[in-house]
Image (cartoon, rainbow, N blue to C red; front, side, top):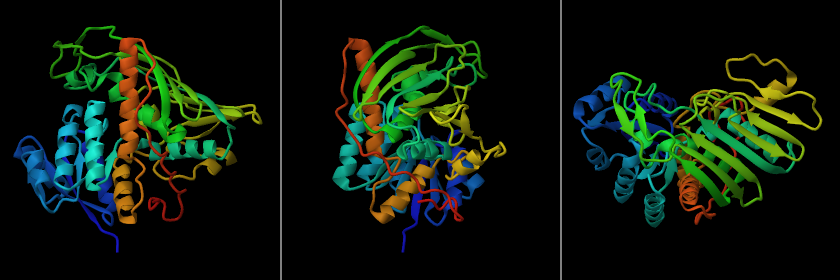
Length: 390
């Protein structure tokens, strides 16, 4: 009989809402039994809202709860390493928001401890498990595009001070465009192409001071202490060469979010909004091959299926915001004794690659990651039991 895993959530900011909503759909696999925040009142309010039995005034208190099997870490990046390590020390599996840690050294410490204790670590983003990412994986694996030779990814915007109530951490070490939004793009690339062999990069800070435009701190300034425009070249172990640009210094763009170039065709994430792209579970995936004269595509979940090609492509679940599905997959994988898909190993390699990019930009040298990982298995196609896809 499969075990149902008790989940304790540390950090109950805005992103916790969608996690808690989604995890309630999988009560045969996971059950959220506790939440923790800095202060008991906020934790109690969230617990009452979602019918959660326990509320704690700190993450440390929650980690001590003997009933919790998996800690879901939704804190800000600078706190990821601390709570991930404390949870592992307490004998609990961990699933954490991205990045795995603020530095590669911290991330390696986490994964070394997990292996020592034979515990699982999972890490967001899990958006690559959505219908678009899995469809892309399928058409690449089945040879629709031929051998992949190159790729490109662009995550460019003017940052977060125009909409976020407290955007300071986006401009400090451990964040910036590469470590904040970049993990969505890096993970999408890694899940399709596998590990990276070598990187080189350039980086700069265009605006050393940012003025907050959003309430309640409108008019206050932020000192920027991290690179905010990074251009990188990545050589993958399989020979694919990719261009990655991440920036908070660009007012607007109509670049596609991602493109994959094969000997027989091209596939692309057609989003224009920089908050879309691999951030989404679904969305427009366009392909054009040597046998077609027009782009064809997988429509968004809110569009009608207009052609036979469209219908044929909608074979995968999770077209809408399914954050937390990586945790559900990890719990299922623990029961089955197999590797999870949104794994700590892939997250550590992602962090390794991103840190190599920053070092390359600073030192004007090529760098090679010291880690690797096994490309995750694709999800099964949807069937009559759609969401039971594990």
